[in-house]
Amino acid sequence: MTRAEIKEHLTKGTDVCMVCGRKLLGEWTDYNGQIRCVDCGATHQVLGCHLTREYLQEFDLEKKDIARTYFDQPESLEIQRDYWKETSKRLPFGWFMETPPNLRKYHNDFIAWLLPRANEYKKQYPDAFDWEAVEGLRKS
Ligand SMILES: [Zn+2]
Image (tube, rainbow, N blue to C red; front, side, top):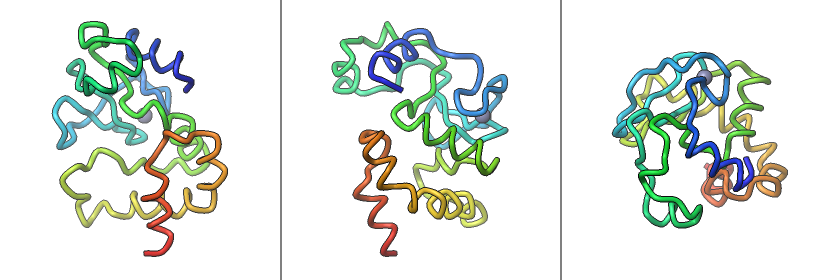
């Protein structure tokens, strides 16, 4: 998403999953107010603004401007959509404490898919991920 599209999305919100396009139904993650789409695993905020003051300032927004339900990783939307379209595998996000061992497969599958594409995506979507951390996974 472009900066303008992100700003518009954050203020308008969504009732469909921004990655798979289905009606947004989710399970709670271990992050306050966040759900994980039961179909594709994409994370959305459903209890209003949890964005930092610094992030809001980047978009010239205030907490009161933010929709109740919004996709919370807009910088990587296109990458997440590509992954879902190409693989139909669940996205591995929404584990802030630690990914449960029985679900690490989602994480490993996503990384295995992302690494060969990382250089290209990094150019197109520099803010999508911490690319240095992604590169670090290549060595592990
Ligand atoms: Zn979804």
